[in-house]
Structures are given as structure tokens and as C-alpha cells.
Length: 575
Ligand code: ADP
Ligand code: MG
Image 1 (cartoon, rainbow, N blue to C red):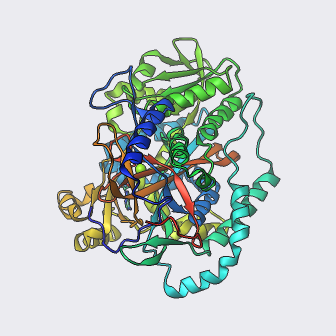
Image 2: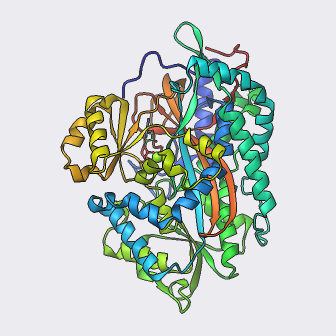
Image 3: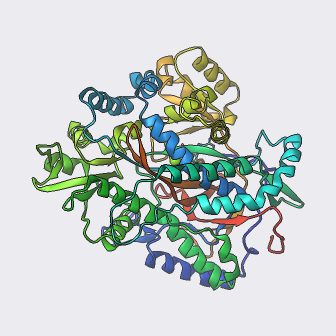
């Protein structure tokens, strides 16, 4: 992807470049530190189940505007509730996916399971949602016209209240560590209190300007950034461990470089605890002391630390809860339903909670056996993360439908909340076989450089970007196009830093990068009630500014964590 030469550059956390000797020393140390603290993965090129490589990482944390970070954190419980409501709206899911499932076999297979579950009625009404809302800063935010800036500048006094509200709203990292005692339902007062805090925050921050002082080529200017959602993940939302682990590594580097004073600007990150506690809360709801938590895994897990640390956290914090790992193929072989539709493995172990870290792409289903296993689990009494309705709610097609204000109204009653959520969507367009879809098609052919074309897939590497779009679209029939959606490209500001990769030349050189922030959320409930709803930490992935995609497991991105900056920070450390 080409990068506009006028793209703003966010100010660095520390002065770069580092002297070569210091850079070599700290990088070598950081690589070992990363491996030894589980910021690691199995090698794809020389795989061994007995060894780990450090995961690619950015040496020092990348800057991120504090207000936008706080806004994203505060909005997460509202997004959780939105997705929960969407997942439980049969009519909406069915109509939204109607065209897509005619041509997309994978989504159609998922939908068939959904249809069968609906026909027989849910065995387990409670779902465990462990979501990750992914976002990028948009440096050319259209709503930030000079007039709007002026108005927002006046609203800037809200800054203090905003921070306080964010601190209050953002504490929900799952907490509840230790013990494994009974989980407590959120009381009505707590919900209302949290809603008020979130609302106050979203009003303050949505109307608040986010200015991050930047260093452009030779002059200083201000980058007015707002964030836009890239996608929302409802299945296998990874980096619950690698998110916090990135902070651990980068904090070490900053201390080694004599910048311990910078650490308070790296927000706390309890993603691992927040997510694992979510699984344990679901286990509590299932309420059978001998039952286990089952992780559904790929045949080969390269991103092993991001699964094992979850398992080890649960085992260490709640030693009475057993965790098992099985592939879909294993479940087909070993799994059956008991008299009350409980999922039994090997004839005796009862599964309370199923956490899918696989099953989100066609390659995970080698034959009908794996689909049968998915269906078996879906009809069982176990609490699924995600249940089939949550999985479908996370499709790109549903995201595109939600971006229309009239649709959002269906799921969010509060006008302020609706406004706040509406602002996070960038342009998303249907390619269904109708007038609107045809207009999208024509627009994509006219100005492809403005867009990204997405199919109903997860896991990276499936999208088509910019100038490649016309050819891809022209190869499809009108009907085939409805398996895809079109989205405005987001233009994040750049950061400059060192990216450290296994096997790469030493010392690393300074490169231009862009980041994507993921905010985790946990929501547990059924069609009528939400029992738990909280924000659960974050993760930051950073890629070369010229790369289309930045999956770390896919080898293009690097672990990172946010260094929060304010518009009025002094800038002595700029490079
Ligand atoms: P997947 O489900 O495969 O992760 P995503 O929608 O997250 O699909 O897209 C993959 C990657 O492509 C993102 O992580 C991001 O780097 C890039 N990307 C996706 N949408 C956009 C967009 N609208 N603007 C800029 N980059 C995007
Ligand atoms: Mg993604």
C-alpha cells in the first residue's frame, strides 16, 4: 500500500535514533526478555513443538492519543451490549445474511447450524461473548472540519471529567481474581451507574478534540485523529496474553534505556485476567463442580503462548477448574451428549464452557466430521464462546449493516450512546445484488484507491486493497459479489520506530509504522438479561506503513503497546 507523503507522524515516546552500541545491546536483551516472558510463538519456518521464537515486537511503545484511547475503553461496554443484542435478533441476522449465504459456503454452513438450533430451541440460553473491537486512528477525520474543531476546542474543559470517568469505567478488567467463588450478577443500580459513567464519558470525549502534536518532515503541526472501527471479532479474539506481555517487554526496554519516568503513560492492561475470569464466570453459571473448560484449538497452534497462558492463568488462579485442549476432529471422535444434553468427552468429562480458538475459517473443517462436531457442541448444554449466534453477529456483513444509523436504532435506545457508536463506523457498503449494491460496485470501480474489499472471513490475508479491487470485482458475478462488503480505507498517522523480528539483521533500522488497537470486552447473558458486561484490557499491533495487513501470527505485524500522549505534552523528546 502506498502512503500519502503528507500523512502526519505522531511524536515518539523517546528520542530516536539510539546510539548503535546501545541499540544493539538493548535489542539483544529485549529478545531474550521476550522469549523468557512468553512474548513468543512457534516458528512457522522451522516448527518444533519443543521450542519458541520471540514474537516480532516494536522496541519502544508507539504513541496513541490518550483521549481516543479512553474513549475506546469507555465505549466497550456499550459495544458489548450492542453485539449481545444483535446476536439475539433472529430476524436481523437472518435478513442481513440472506444474500451472503446464497454464495458464501462457509457462512452458509454456520447459518445452517444456527437454523437447526433455532428449530430445536436453544439447549443453553446463556452465551459467553469475549469480543475484541479493533480500531485505527483516522488522521483525516471528515467531521473535524475547522468549524468543528473550534466548537470542540471549547468543549475541551471536559478533559478532567473525561479522565476521571474513563478511570471509573475502565476498571472492569474482570477483577474477581483468586478464589473462584460464586459470580455476582450486575445489579440494576450498577448497570445504570456504569451506563451513566459511559454516557458522560462518551459525551465528553465524542465532543472533545483529540490533538496529538506531531513531527512532520520539517515542521510541527497537529494531527487531529479520531478512531474508526476496523472490525469487531466475536470468535477467537487473540492477544489476551500477548497484549499485556508486550507492555512487559517494552517497559523493560524503557527502564533499561533510563526512561522509567515514561512508564506511567503506558496504561495498565489486565486482558489475560479479564478474559480468563470471563470464562470462569461462565463456569460458575454452569454450576457443576467437576465440569471442565474446553479450548477448541487448531491442529497446530503457532500462537501457543496466547492460548497456554490463558490455560495456566486459570489453573493457577482457580486450581479446582480443569482445562482441556481438543481439535474439532478430536471432539468428533470423543464427544457425545449425555441425558441432559451435557457435552461429555471420553464418556465422562463434562464440559461447562467451550472457548473456540479455532473454527473461524474453512480450513479448520477438514470434512463433515468437524462440522458435525461444531453442531454437537452447539446443541449441547455447554456455554459457548462464541455461541453460533455470536459467531454470525461478528461477520463483516453484519458490521456493514450495523453502520447504517437506521439499523443501529434497532439495538441502542439511548440517543447519546447511538451517536457515540455511530461515529466509530467509517463508510461500509453493501455489495448485495440490488440497486444499492450496484451503486457500490460502480463507486469501487471509479475510485478503488479509497477502499478495501472484504469477504466473510477471519484471521487475516483475505481482503483486497485499492487498485486490486476492480479486477477482483470484475471476476465475480453480481450474485457472487454479495459475499463481500466494501469499506473506506482508514488512514492512520505514522509512528517511527524499531521493529525487531526473529532472524532479521541487527541492529534494526528505523521504519515508518501504523498501529491497530484492539479493546477486549466480556459479556455474558441470554436473550433477556445481561449478567456481566465489562471492558477487559487491550492489545496493540503495529505493521510497516506500506503493508496492507498486520497479523502478528501471519508474520506481518509486531507486538506493541500504547504510549499515551496528550496534545499539550511538551515535546523535548521529539526526533
Ligand atoms: P480479519 O478478520 O481477517 O482480521 P480485518 O477486517 O481485521 O479482517 O482486516 C485485516 C487487516 O486489514 C486489519 O488488521 C488492518 O490492518 C487492515 N484493514 C482492514 N480494514 C481496513 C480499513 N478499512 N482501512 C485500513 N486498513 C484496514
Ligand atoms: Mg482483524
